[in-house]
Length: 432
Image 1 (tube, rainbow, N blue to C red):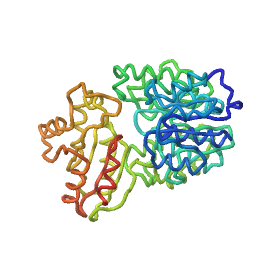
Image 2: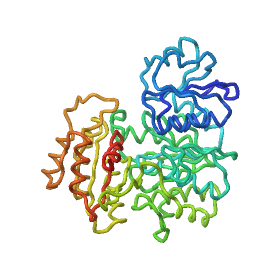
Image 3: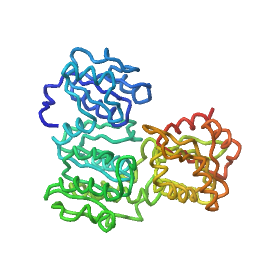
Image 4: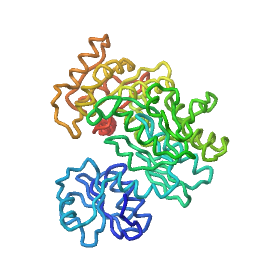
């Protein structure tokens, strides 16, 4: 963000500080010696951690939260522009920027390694952080989850390297100027913003063109979806498929994680990490929060929680579970996230549900939307049954799903809880 001198910022206030990205950036500002405050409507595990670390947290939005010494406001893009704190700060002439503008302000000062893609970017980012850490590269990093090894989404480093997860929503990642760009994959996603696949490709192409000639783009170079993205780029293109190693044993299952690890190894190789160090770090990689995260056992059945909310992610996660638990029944509790995504990818969702033996659908999570599409979890269940899947049921509440799973679960099954809405609450209900 041009025209802002980080050295002169004394007190930064974060509106929506409970978000996974926002909380990581707040930690960075705190580590840089800034006074940090933040607000959110609902206290969470993240805001609790921030409070312990020294952030002043407000559990409601109020103009009073903008203290007289606040000289920078960072807000989440999910925040309405008429938010009372945002309006108050602007009226007082305080500089207000969104999360990605603030991230670019900080990250672009470093040798930046950005991990983008429709799926797998969180895991790949965390893998690369573990590798760089093990190699002694001492990176600064922000990832869109909590690393299992450190229980945090931020790493304070002292080297020139900055590793960051780069989200394509609303072309937000275009505030970044990466020296190395990892593209895990590319599909039509964020359908409430992008018009079609070509629109998504255009955003990725704009980012790819920012990578300098001496830099690198790590990707599945032969993927037809990436062809228009890579055409004419000046950076070196490296195909991470050359780094897929069936002999590398990972703690996180599934071919998708084998590909994630290959992308991380390719990026590490480009910056000079010895492959033996990378392989050892990957073999020890314990995952991240809400990415096939083990939560315990219910009546002998392991329970996993996962953030996946796209048909491709459902397929990958269920197949990974089958790889880890061959012969067991996969019981999938899934919550569609946003009506627009459910509408645009409806048939693909119905097909993806075929992967599980039993499916328990929660009511769709509206997020920022009104249901102008007339779609629903009930209609998705009906379509899945029309396709021949006899064990797909839409439930009225998470509590109803919990009761149903308690009845049907046994030691011959695995429970997967998936979705980007409030479905993580189901875990506590299962063990209540």
